[in-house]
Image 1: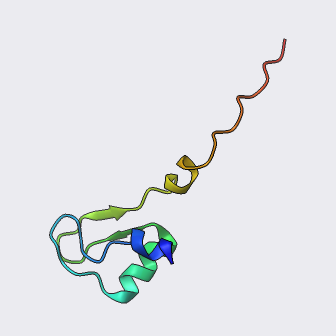
Image 2: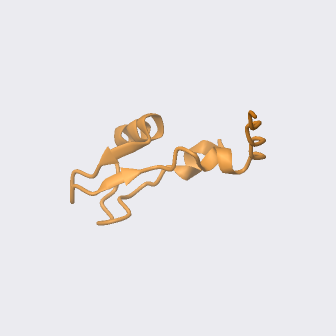
Length: 62
């Protein structure tokens, strides 16, 4: 389960451990506020898309 590895176990700002429920919320909503320091933890929504090939540019209309 690779997706689980991307979810942090602690706040990157203060180091407070995230509860299992906070980790679930973070995996679903991609953002939560730390209850310890009020730091906004945001997961990159486009992280998965960067590994894929980029879409072709739109055609220009004359």
